Image 1 (cartoon, helix red, strand yellow):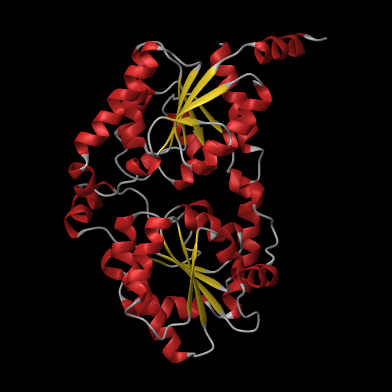
Image 2 (cartoon, rainbow, N blue to C red):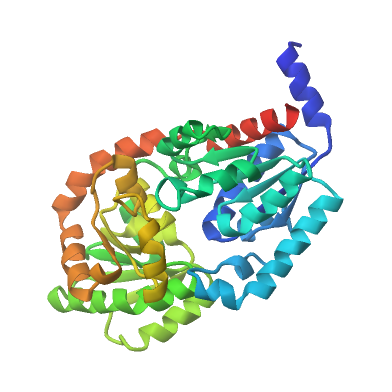
Length: 390
């Protein structure tokens, strides 16, 4: 047995606890993938912290409900500040008194970095999985990250160079979704699974996974859908809700659109997008998913007026969506804040539904897919192993 095998054998035999904390649905997906990879490397490992249904299904003991951390903007976190601070204090106290092998904060930087700073100061190895958009706005945060994080795991290739430039230990691991999503989408099969008409055009509407996002974007997107349906009565719509609460919220919104042929489903967002000809979406991880599924898309986002005024001066990148950031050009339209009008969204979505949009974008999306298609969980677990053995 060689030295590397000896090391792996010893490491694998050590019982250990990994603490993971995810604050929203996209982090839950990443966390579940990472747990599987860590368990392959550390068969006796135990996993605890905060996570959603996917992480819990992989064996995570979650000490708080993940949904309590899913807040957006500035106002909503302020309203929930006592509760959020209480959860943070509990996590810090818990892992200060019983240190894990490593603490892994998954995304949610405003929440996780404070925990990572406190634990790092106590000598506990800290990992942050998914770079904050520090390369895009509020670049001064890199100084805080250096003080909090022993290892940054990035999903996107251009992020690794940024961290190396600032002397932050980093590993580019690719994006797990690029390996989970087939490079050739099965559109007809997805429609059949959802019981949708295979012969009619289909638009997937994705107003966001948070209550505040659906409040700001849901009605706007439905107005666009009504305009599109008035132009083409063969058009059908599918709207996946991120969870039960969002489903109830969307049911209420749809009461104002009784004639709209919209199928509302709970979860199954990837299947809904795979079935679609195009996607109208709120900016975020959904744009990456639509790109991996080779779907033309229109990316939009709105914040509260005061929140946007506070945020705008700190934005340092010309693009908001991952497809455009990866490509370094405006592959897909982005309609943000005041540009997110019904008319602008209607025109952009109409163009996205045209067959030539798919023909133009699919080859580029396939190239980007290949760049991200790495064994992300295994690469992340390997980097974490190196960190804790150092």
